[in-house]
Length: 119
Image (cartoon, rainbow, N blue to C red; front, side, top):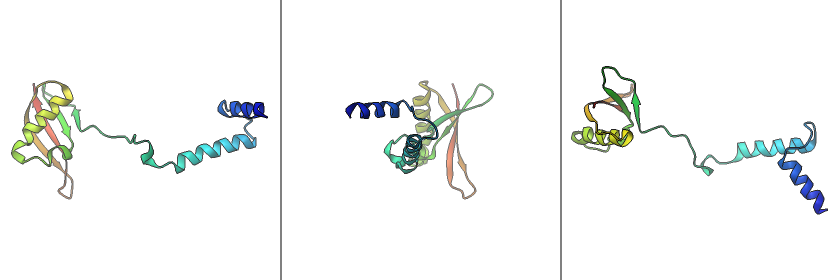
């Protein structure tokens, strides 16, 4: 009987059952159960957005979107310097931040910051 188990395992791995067979239905059921019943956090590979993203700009300047979690804890006087450090970490180049503008939603919550730079 060990040969029967090995043959069955080989057919299972290679998906070698006819489409209308009960073995095929069992494999599809196992796959669907795995998809729907596996907890999200098991793989910890949730998509994450970039913290600092370069946006299109004109006139040789660059514009970067910075997530609010990176700048909100900082005192307002230090935010421009921290933004410059974040942009440097993203690009690898020393760039000076000319202007830093908070972007608000309709409830006046900060959704992010636009950092305007020049080389």
